[in-house]
Length: 228
Image 1 (cartoon, rainbow, N blue to C red):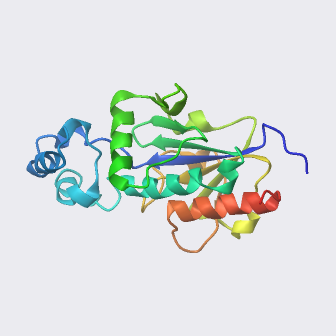
Image 2 (image 1 turned 120 degrees about the vertical axis):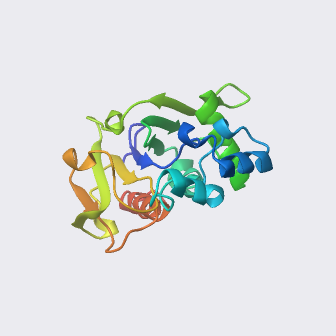
């Protein structure tokens, strides 16, 4: 099979629970305590339910299991960036946050194995903007935009959701130029209007972690087109 430079799998993470501590929470005693303990500015700190569960519940009742989960992106991005598909320069990863920011991740970007270092990287990105390598190459970029900015008229758009049409992972309708959309949250459903734009597919009868969905999608793509 002939492979050309346009043949890539685009993985889009939608409604990602990745954000700095919301302004409404800045004066919370727990937020101030965490910031002091970590030696960080409270207004430049990632919202993290591992440290801020009680504070999230005070301001956003019932949402502490979904909000503040940067750890899931640490796991996800360490996997995607180290995948065989990415090493072949055939994977692109974009993250749309629930605050309508879009993070684009260059294929050569390698994520820190340490979660604390990853958190610091995301804080710098969300606070300062694009991050470059020592040679000046943009590794992580951020821009404003809704998830619809990631819809493509050149690639086949595929939506994966627990509430979608039941199929096997090997039956995900992938072509050599596919753009796949998955949820960026640990529980619940999309808040964006993704179902108005795409037909959803489900690859399992239970909710899966985002890194599991990514792994199944990438693995299916690699095997379908004999890329291993």
